[in-house]
Length: 353
Picture 1: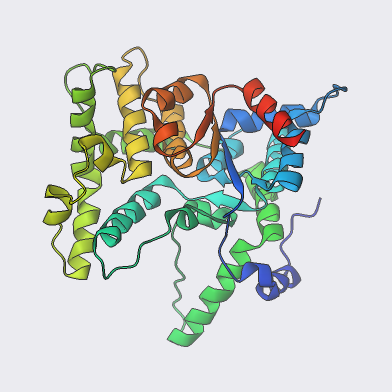
Picture 2: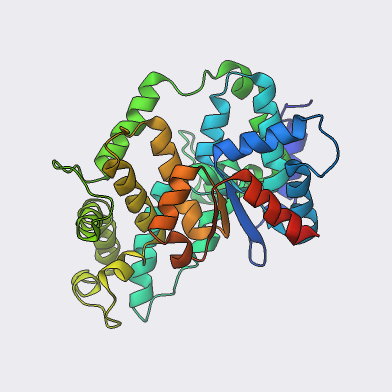
């Protein structure tokens, strides 16, 4: 298995016209798998069972015959890299590249910021509306991680920097290069996965992103949930809304205090789909006092916040799938939620027959 990235491969990526543009998933059915589901697909792929079509075979057929695409997330990459079984990692990364066709989903923090900008643009007539779906889904591993810049200490002109950045964008969008990056020996053998320090950092970021409430939360209390959403919005989203307005020379007050469409409290927060989903899932976890939010919860919440808002189908574990159903996320954003593998498999079978 060749995992080297040669100079020739880089030159091919720069000259490949497919790497000129960002992703366009219009007309495709976008399906998001949480990490457990990728494991199920891998197990189906390596199983010796015969007879009916296996889950991985159905998924591959859906890509080839029905324009399905299965983008991977930063959380998928982190969790796969953290696995101890080398063969498992190789198998999962290969499947990710086959089913995603090198498409990825952007990290939730960057999506939050873009949703704030999109909200401002939508409400001022002179500003163009932003296509959030084209922002959320892109090509390659670098898109999943978020923003990137080129820095150099060399004496290079602005024109040269621009050209280097254009070429680099083509390289990091390239399918073969991304496949080799995921399968490289550095990732598979030398990286130990997520350290205890990294886990603590993720958990601490979660605590900073949501309102810490002293008293116990009631899962069925919509007033309490609304206050929770409002508190997190003030802390996390309002600074970005104000920043965007300040850069455009606009006042943020009309956007927050008055809406000409007279949106309800719930509808207002749904104008920020990933944020709305994220905060509701945080509320659900915090309201379940029998489970302290841990690293795995944080990973699940961050990836589902974006996927459940912008993908067409999400396949996830029962707890979070149930919470997405409870808070009507699937109807709010027209996303089909599957909470077990067998139901999704039946859907694929019926779609392809």
